[in-house]
Amino acid sequence: MKCKTNENTNRSTRTLLALIAVGFTLLVIPTVSVLLDPQYRMMIYMTRIAVGSRFYKIFTRENVGTLLQVYVFNVTNAEAFLSGEDHKLRLEEVGPFTYQEYQKNNKFEVDEEAGVMRYIPHTRTEFRREQSFDDPERVNITVPNAAMLAVSSMLSSYPFWTKTGFTVLADRLQSKPIIDINVHSLLWGYEEPLIALSNTLMPGWITFSKMGILDRLYDQSSVPMMEVSTAPQDKFKVKKIDGSPGLNVWGYDNPSKRTRCNTLVDTYEGYAYAPRLTRDDSIRLYRSSFCRMLDLSYIGTTATEITSEAYVYQISNKSYSIDPSTECLCGKINECIDGISNISPCLYGLTIALSNGHFLYANPKVYERIEGIRPDEKEHGSEFIIEPKVGAVLSGRFTIQLNVVVKDVNYYYRVRPFSEMVVPLAYFKIVQPQLAEEDKNDIKMSNYLLPYVIHGVEVLLLITGLTILVYALRQMYLQWHCSAYHENNEKHNDKLQGSREAKL
Image (tube, rainbow, N blue to C red):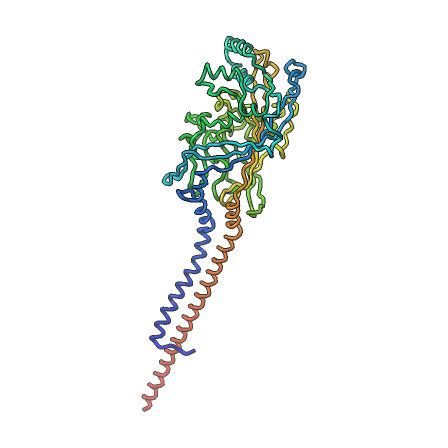
């Protein structure tokens, strides 16, 4: 190797030191990349909720919501049951009658400083004839009169004179415990004299004049203001409802009664969940029409067309059970019935309750006096498939059944056959909408393409950095070796020169 002059050596050393710095930097970058997880940070940026962002625009426009398939229960032995000839109420399922939800967030605002967004969710529906059994206005059915049964049940604990006055009034108004009606009227409102009179005489108690199943569930007059997190670590978690971090209707406003049951911990509306979900994370579902939270249970993983691993959840089997997690729903005198969930505080005290479709997972004693109830996990169960990295809902379905809890109503001969029964009215299959193609493509990119690109760049930087570092260190070694060789030669020549001079 030909050694360089001192001037060239100094210049070469500076160049090699610069190369070593570059090589070391290129080694550090992929290491830092692994620690910082750029894939996650890119997805957080893409899904940020800030003024002008893509998701901000989504939340401020009307969007397609869930698909609602309604199944009503038709009574086939009305006369025999009311006369006492039949001990059991016979029902047959009629449906589906399908409605498409559309959702818009009124008064939407983003508070970037607080890390939340606030809005009042507004929902409207459109009937889908092509996905339905028939036009609901053309289908006539025989059903329990929910208004009469609920009011009769609610008054069961009142004094004798109150109950007597009610029976006289109900007879005079000719209210019937079982009525013939078309499906549209059952869902969106029918004239019930007891409700109309209550609305007139007690407007502060009953604020509506007609009784309709969907009309009550989609009541837009009392929709609460939602406050939902926009922070990356807990995005889409519900923080407050009407300014409260809990459900006051179930006792949160009393500090001594605050529990997980009535506190908005781990609660979502269900359209999306926090990123970086793990199998151990707790998830609860809330909608104002539920009047409560529903716990989801993790049951496994599955592969889909847009991700190799998605988490599968279902509504917990204990959601309607008597359990410490549902204790706040039982009221002051422990009125819980295993298998159903009372929501009367949200419906003016009317004894209405929720359950799974066909009382799935409930104690069979709940429906021992009813024929036609056939719980089936495939038909009446639930499934939520969630992409855990960004918290996107890939698909979701579950059922909710609306029932009237009839207490001891033996005081009134017309409703006596229903005494101590839980009477099903209808159940709903709720199917969450498919992701938009743009969202699917984003998730595909983040799960399949983006990791390869990022890892490819990391490997390229690593190899490049190692190559530069090895080359620079080798050149430094050779330069050092050359300098040492040159120095030794000079010392050797100096010794020879000194020896010659000594001989002379």
